[in-house]
Amino acid sequence: MRRDCQSRHSSGFTLIELMVVIGIAAVMMGLAVPYAYNMLNKKGMHHAIEVVTKACQYARAQAIFKGVPVDLKIYPQRGGFRVPNVSSGDRDASMPTPPSLRSTQDNEGSGSGFYSATLPPGIQIQMVDINYTEYKDAEEAVVRFYPNGTSDKLTFVMREGEKKPRKISLEVITALPDVEVIEGVANAEELIQ
Image 1 (tube, rainbow, N blue to C red):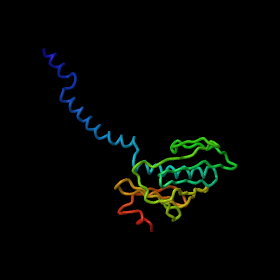
Image 2: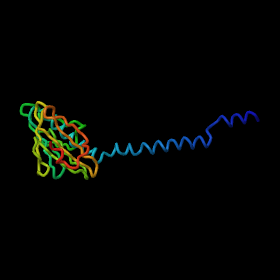
Image 3: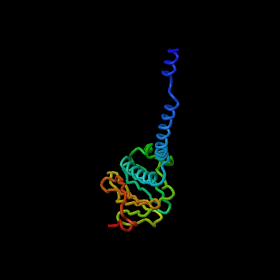
Image 4: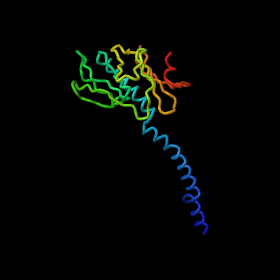
């Protein structure tokens, strides 16, 4: 009889122990699911920043690799971005789109492809300033990237609802995009300095 009592206590978990473990697991899942959902569903401002920065990075890469100036076309009224096909003269015309920059791949002409993307719904463009000229109300604006890694000066400001605006700017010397949150600004006109 003594042997039965020992084996009953040493085998398995009690119902209370199982419920505690299940409760802890439920709390951990409750905390992790919203974070994982936001990471998998890039929407809103996060996706908009990605669209603009990748368009700039792709145009810069095309200009450097092909050795010719490349234009990034911005369509402020539609919230669209496009880097059209460019010919490279003497260079190899087939530069594939890097997977990290691939949005729309088109194999027309030389097969070099192009980048094309649109801002997600709910994003308001507040400023498209190229070389100190405002193009927010224009049908098309063009930012030129050069083979030496430089570009036109671009300041692009966008906002989602009542959230703080985001400013993406290109430094003319490096042509690399820089993103910053704008604090204490009511409208885009206050940014012009």
